[in-house]
Image 1 (spheres, rainbow, N blue to C red):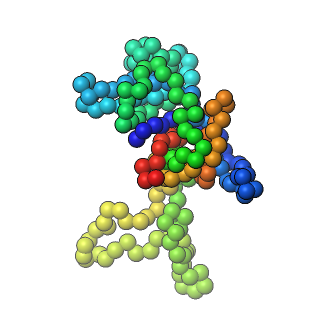
Image 2: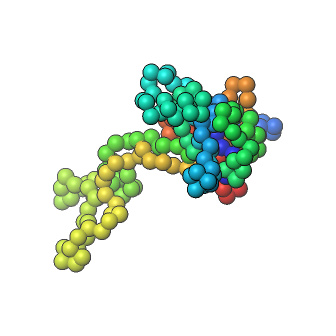
Image 3: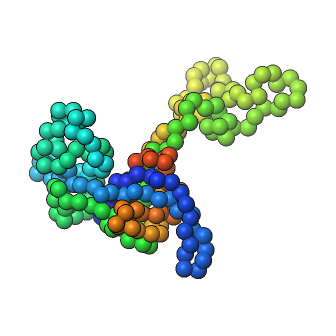
Length: 210
């Protein structure tokens, strides 16, 4: 990973390219972020930088985190994310990372937490077929059906597709194109959709499969 930034999803809109074609984009408030900690191979066994995003009142920070921010002489931040960059020597504690770290045309991966949809049945969660609803199926048209044989293996295997919690998972969308960057307003417009609701925290970093 060469570069990355933390931001907030503002929503979706559309832009027009040079040929007049409509481009659906997700607008992200990217930064400004501050380097709150720098990890080294000597002290931590690996090299990385910790980046903070979003201002936070000092009264809402617990004592361990107060000491953490005080050690780096950095104002308290709501969100902390760690990046293992190829060259961490270019950044130091206190440095500011802005939206212009990316440019139009860059290929990025965006990671976020998908929308939580609560407890869902097998049809909504796994796209199961429903049973016939004409005759003799009873009140089980949307049930999951048989879960396995009784005598062998006499149990249900792990990973069996069943009803359960849907969404609220960490999701990464790869190879999205940066359409527009506004450094003054800390805005990055990315082509396509990214995980999470409006106001959700997302992480942008250069694409690993570009």
